[in-house]
Structure formats: C-alpha cells, structure tokens
Image (cartoon, rainbow, N blue to C red; front, top):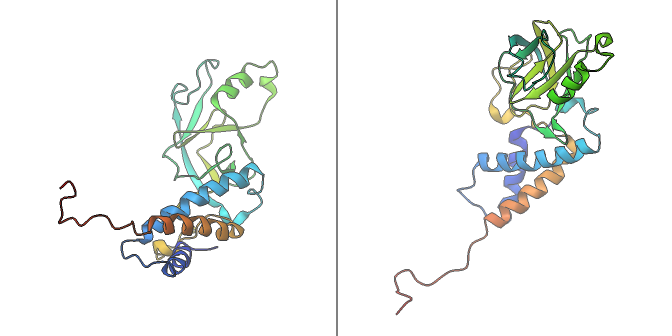
Length: 220
C-alpha cells in the first residue's frame, strides 16, 4: 500500500513545478490527502466496491467488552431483562462510507461467528417481533465511537474496519515512523486523490495581486 510519506512526497514534487512554498507542511498535505480520500471512499462504498479490497482494512483482534445500561446504548423501549455489551474503550477513528463507519466484519475473536449490523431503532423493532425468540443471530451497532452488542455474552470481539492512522494490534511494528504508515485507500484511487490535492493546494499557493504601497495613505 502507498504510505503517508510516499503520497506526501509525490504531491510536494508536483507542487514544486508550480511554486515552492516553504510554509507548506507535510501535515497540510496529509490532511488534504485524507479529506479527498474520505470523499472518494464514500463514493466507492456507495458503489459496493470496498469490501473486496482486503488491503485497506485493519484488524483489532481482541476488543474487550463491558456491561452497560440499555439507555446508554440509545435503545429505549426494549423488553426488560435485555442485556447489553459495549466495547470498553472507544474504537480508533474509522473512515465513513456511504452508510456510516466502514466496518467489514465484527465477529467472535476466532472469526467463526459474524455479527449483524443494525441500529438501536431497528433492534427495538426486532425484539418486538413475534419470531424474536427464535432469532439467534448476534447484532451490533456503532454509536459515539463505541460498538454496542445487545444479545451476546462474550468477553471480547474482533473488529475489521478502515481505520484512520495507526492501529495498535499484534501486527503493529513499534519501530515504524508515522510517514511509513499506509494510507487506507485503494491504490487505484491515489491518482485521483492526488490530482484533487494538487489542484486545491496550487490555488491556495497563488500569489495575490500586489496592492498599494503600504507606506502610502491611499485615502489622500
């Protein structure tokens, strides 16, 4: 995958042909890359192209769960006796797709049981259906940075998503510098992303037309 450093370097080299700006930082270029990458991710997700691209997804293999009150989960009106699990800590930032955070799978830690995505309102409707007692599928929803799991009793789950930035997991190399982190965008999008970034930054770098001499009072 293309790293942050590689993408920033390509954009900077392209901009040098227009005008070299000592105030243009790597951080500015990175934020522009991320902004347009996010926009194009939404477009691709809307066209159902992302889930088959394994390289853009990162895995949190063990996300601890705790018990929480159903009110906190945004789930008012469920039958009493329902229990809820929630990720103990907020998840790292996840890029949004067409329908919210881009989550490929949420499952048991061994991956054998995959959970079904829903939302609080739909979950309430499910629990009130006449066939609910026969429904053994595990569900989850994403709310305010957490995952809520209303009908499991597990200690942890496995999460695979398009995370922004470095994700601490068993596969993380602590020696990697930030510039060596991959940008989680499909390779075929980088040309388009970089074109948008170069266009925006080129416009921002244009020198304004010289105005009146500051030493003179133009109102005389």
